Length: 173
Image (cartoon, rainbow, N blue to C red):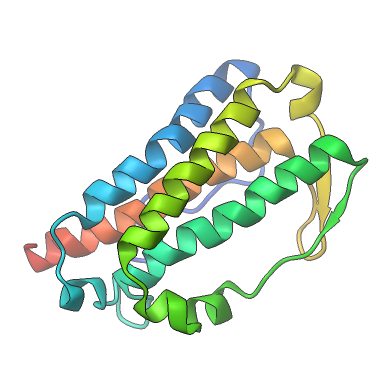
């Protein structure tokens, strides 16, 4: 198994059927609790253990999720209120090395993710078919439709939770 991509890599060529959206939104709704369960009972040493050789620590993965999802939430809001807004990327590796990502309690980001996802789910459940077809232009990745971005972030939460679960299984935690 590929420790970096335990559930496989995301398929950017897929199309997202209208009927798939409620399940993908539900994945977003459930992501904070799934992540909370994945780290439940881990001590500080375990939280500071890389999920794979050369990878981020569990703590950094936990802090990465709200970092990434906050960026995505803002992109959704921009795409819904502007015509194909330009958005910039961010250096997630450098963000993961900042002091808060290396040392803050996991509970801080678990709470942030929970509340962020509550807002995001409220937004997404009110979106129309036309809203889902809206897009933003990512400086590095090009145009991105909101429906495909939903699928990406459904995958993203599961992807990182599976990294932590895989480590726990390998280490017998």
